[in-house]
Image (cartoon, rainbow, N blue to C red; front, side):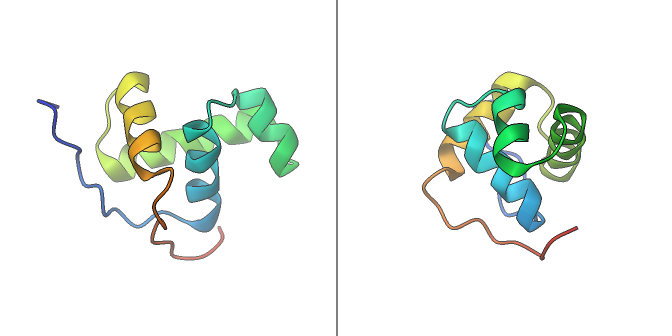
Length: 80
C-alpha cells in the first residue's frame, strides 16, 4: 500500500459505512453484530466487500481506513 490509502472515495453502502465506523471505534465483529442486529458472519461479509471496493488487502490497512474515515461523512449508495 506504500502509505497511500487505496480508493478512499469508493462508494460504500450505508451498512458497509456503518460497519467501518464501528471498526474505527475499535469494536469487535461480535460487538458490531450486536449493535447492528446482524450476525458476526454478516459483519465479516460486509468487511470483505469493503476490502474489495477499497483495494485494502489486510486487516491493518482496513483498520487504518476505518480510523481515517471514522470522523468523515462517508459517501454512501444506500442500504443493501
